[in-house]
Each structure stands twice: as structure tokens, then as C-alpha cells.
Length: 329
Image (cartoon, rainbow, N blue to C red; front, side, top):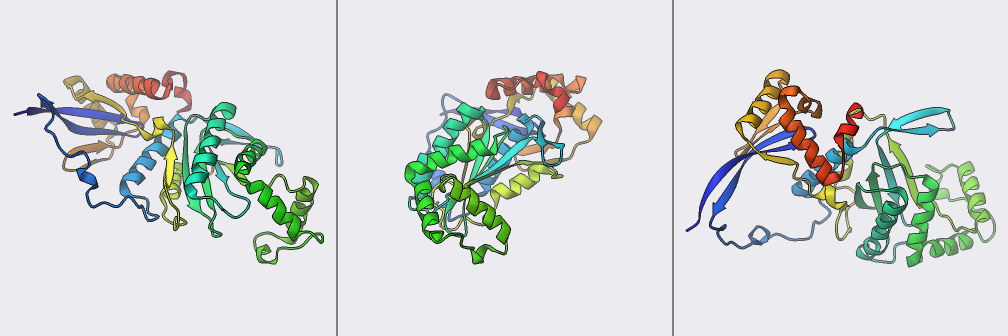
């Protein structure tokens, strides 16, 4: 019969230190049904983001923000420069959706990320799928890279036109404006007449080959950016009728164990030093304790073992050298 023993462990993340215990089995772990946790559980999310998914999304956002450096976005219209960390892009379909959600994700969204990595060096990203009021699938993308809006639109339009969405948009616009400019009365509330005229002239000039299928802006002027993004990415609205995955991210953000180490006497002393000096908030459950620390606390000389372990984890998991970016954190 297999025996076991319990090892006290620590997992270090950018804004918290988790204390827990790990069971180590001697002579092999007892066999069990690996799918027992799925018995009686439906795989249909029914448009709801599960508690497990919310925790994964929140952790991915936490690390995406931590790994992102401050960037400046020049505002040529006002002559100002805005600092931001993340870019928030929206990808839509310019004509009615005629393919399944699965096919659009496989043939368009996947291709987008392949090209985004190649052309804009996008490595870390989070995407969220939603349904528009017209029933079309669209995607919100969070990334730590700046993407020029014109390049984003041209590339996305080319990708989705492999499924004919730009061609169908062109046919619709040619037909709608066959007798010259025609105002869209149902859109006047949010799209004024002068703006519709400008859009018509621009579309007419390029023969409706570049629909306004994307939007991108830098996320700034938000007091608690992590809370704002978490709330946005985990909401259940606009999910009705959406099939397949509601969200996703690159592999590194989807699998983040943190810096894990055995809770030795030296590690325990380092944690106690943080608690005594900074009095951080904490929360304890039946099998764990979470200390809500800050990365700056790890830089305390008495906590160097924690800082070194977390730095090594970032380098191995994300190829991120924290020593080169400390002034920006």
C-alpha cells in the first residue's frame, strides 16, 4: 500500500504569495478515474464564464500587466504623448456571419495571431469572444505591443476575406449606394450625418475594399486597470448563442504555476519579514493562505531568496529579465 507525506510549499506571483501543502506519494500515487471531476458536468458553457475560467483570466491579466512596460503613444492631433501599457483591439466581421464560430476562430483568429507574432512581435495576448447585437462574432484582444491601426485593419480584412467577408461587404455597399449616397437613418443616433458622408466618400474612393472592421486604442486613464480588465473579460453579457471557447491566451499565460519552492526555514523567515515590515493583507482558506504582497516587497534585502526565485521563474517561463526592467516596475 502506498504511503504519502506532506511538503509545505510556496508559490510566488507578482502580487501575492500562496502558502499551501503538496502531497507526495511513496511507491506511486493510488489509481483513480482521471475524469471523475467531469461526471455529470456539461461541457456547454451556455454563455457563462465559469469560476475556474475567471480565475485563469484574472491570473493571465495579472501577469500580462506585470510583464508590460510603459510605452508612449504620440497624439498628433493634440500634440501630447500618452503613456500606456496595453493595447486593446477589437476585430469584427463587416458583413453577416455565414460561417460557424468554430470555423472563424480556426481560420481567421488563429491566423491573425500567427501573423501578429511575426509582424508585430506579439507574444503575450488574451482574447475574448462575444456576439454583437446583429449576431456576428467579434473578438477583443489584449496585448502588450503597439499595433498601428491601419496595419491591423488591412491584415484582418485580408484574413477574413479568405472566407469572403470583405467581398460580401463590397457587394452590399455597392447595392445600398447604387443611386448615390443614402443615409442610414437607424444609425443616426450614434453616427451623425456628416460622419456618414465622410465614410461614404472614403468607401467609394477605394471601392469599399477596406471596411471599418477593427478598432484599437491604448488602455490608460483607468485607476485600477487590472480590476477594469478582469471585469470586462469575465462578463457574461453578449455570450448568448456563442459556441466554442469564450476566451484564450498564449500558452505561457495559460499555464502559470508561479515560482514554486519548498517552505524551508530560510523561506519562512523571508515571508515573516515581509509580514512584519509591510503588514500586507492576507486570506486563509482550509488548505492555503494567500498573502497579498507587492513585487517591490520581494526586493527587500531580507527577502532576497523570494526575489531570486521569482526572477528565475520569469526568465525561464517568459524569457523576461526582471533585472533589466526594475526601474519601470
